[in-house]
Length: 217
Image (cartoon, rainbow, N blue to C red):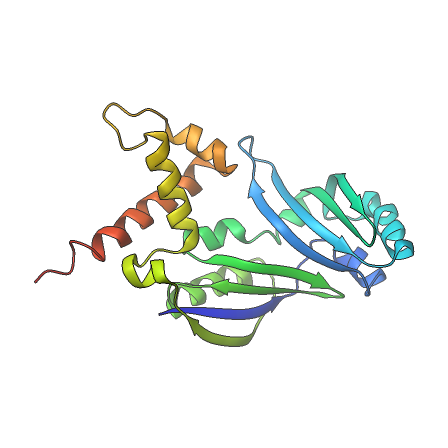
């Protein structure tokens, strides 16, 4: 079974803005390192019209933000793409999570802390992730842990992200001889670094083999 954990981090991303507007809710829709190495977030921001206007007015002066772009506006919600500054990048733990096969299921923020729900391959992986957060001076507080087991995981031991990447690699001809696509092209398709896509492929293949042909004694 793959544990699902809930925890909070004292994260610098939008901290000043969150503290000033505690009623605004921010939910991360996408978190990535672009092909060019730029750390980016896409966030759904909800609240009253007055708070949303104040939110956008504060973004240019928030020390965690390099630049931002308002993608869409729909009543009490706005979809905003954010490029993180060096200070903000400290709070971007998605690349660390990928290295330990941790899948973020939900990331949201309101007030002074960011709340995470994540599927982890093991408690050991969570411990390593927590150590990396500590190294960045991000205060980690575990609030809940329970078991969740999907059909694909029961069959093959794959996280949803690993399955997605392996399936796309197969469809694009990455495993063909000669290859029909490159690691770089696959990374660009998922908008992550070559290192991150390589880790997902390697660990996904390892789990798939272990749960199919690797169980014979």
